[in-house]
Image (cartoon, rainbow, N blue to C red; front, top):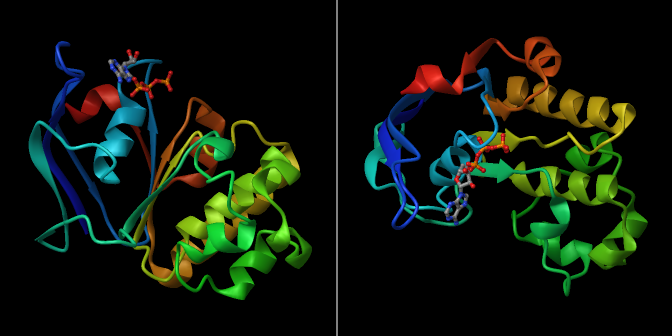
Length: 200
Ligand SMILES: Nc1ncnc2c1ncn2[C@@H]1O[C@H](COP(=O)(O)OP(=O)(O)OP(=O)(O)O)[C@@H](O)[C@H]1O
């Protein structure tokens, strides 16, 4: 179980962005999260995935406080893959950050072997996002946070990526937090859907 307890965050010199957030995600559970623009959903995702340090509160997995070991068991994929990938690395090296990604995942995501020797600038946004998803689904991942992950993609690529994630979530009991403004997408994918305002 991933347990977020009493989480609070403020940018330096700014008022509290959110305070005392509590959220539990069980293994294999798919939770949807929506809320108004600027309310702090992305910041919450970054805190849970250990990109930002909370001002108050804890994130625990199976009672253990998470430290910053890599690969981190909670992986975050966001909207803009080009900002999440080192432009100087070929895709094979980008992917190797996750350890040994199961070739079946690469297949399911439609990642062509010929893409491995290309630089990020030689791939489309949708192709890059597939790599970000694959990298986030390495063998050490127990929880995935998808923050507007497929918003920029065409319907077919969206469906392929979500199909792969839901299938894997079931097989490996990966808990998923889906952050989106698309209520229909959330209703379709998730076991339950929560308003960000209800968390605190
Ligand atoms: N480095 C920063 N310093 C100060 N304020 C920031 C910083 N980064 C983000 N913010 C502000 O924090 C607030 C929350 O941003 P965040 O991206 O978490 O919201 P969000 O709920 O994900 O929004 P959206 O739905 O539009 O993506 C916004 O008002 C944003 O302007």
